[in-house]
Image (cartoon, rainbow, N blue to C red; front, top):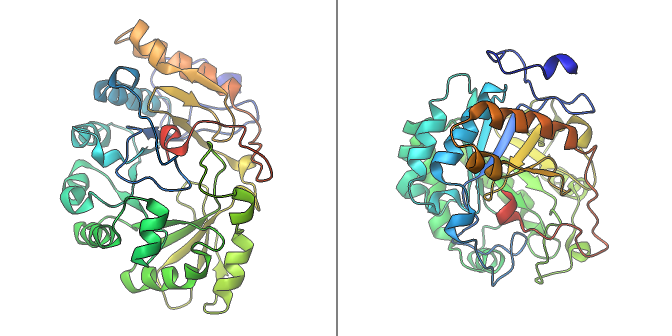
Length: 343
């Protein structure tokens, strides 16, 4: 591990220079560009969220500098997220800068789909290779209930815009909640198959106090979802990966991959290759822990000093914990909401 830390020369292209105490290479970073969103999804934030003042969040220039530092340290995949990243003014300029970084293998984006009709073509031209789109229900009333502010027709049109733009393997993400949308998993898979999309089903992450539902009562495991799908589809496990936490299954005769993100039922911490940067510039070493490094402070105290920024990122690897402590039977130990964390 020492050899991965004597670093500040030319970055190696073959492996990450970021290795934690447990020997896990970090080659994937998720960067939140805003905590704001035009939806208020019940699993993501409180209905009456207060958003951060502009001075507390990273500027687009700081986000670009941070991205460059990570790539020089061997990160090969960057995901831009939020909040809803496409509501931030000037975000396409940031996408162009990040997409042009030498050595970056893949730039991807997570969105709720509401702005894709406007921005899909520009995102593709700027270098975004793949897009994940949240879609938790195909029923307009349920969709509005879960998102509190979203319109299903707008998101469906955004999905079509993404297909027209020609992204590689656009994926739908569905957070499954018992007695809210768990009975739609087969319909969502059919929707994905008909459109040549991938889909991942996600167990709810217990981040922040939400007030909408009891997370223990609403928990619906990946195993239960697979059981439900098995009534309609043959699922064949694969070793395919997109570099994230999804574990994929194939359906014979279809190009669609069905993924499962299972932080509770099938913990994936032992293979974690990811870190996150919050909209405030905190480098989070684990989604479910508070171990972090304040990179905004480093950048603002030493503007333009990329080596110092890289040294701070490297030092933070020693803070990365072995795993999370998610619990569904108690109030969350993490009080930050998903929209401030980076979805």
